[in-house]
Image (cartoon, rainbow, N blue to C red; front, side, top):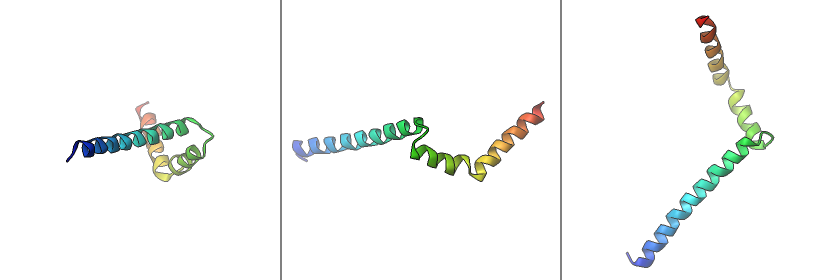
Length: 67
């Protein structure tokens, strides 16, 4: 592998990491914005799901049984 090939490979790997970080930062920012479509979709699919409701119910039941 030539020095130029190594530089291209390093640049490609850095680009991949930069794109990954951009995606993470964008997702984080969108989740902080409660009016965003992404936040609404996550709330609808996660918070309103039956497994989530069951988990909350179990936590409440466990806490009530302690007292």
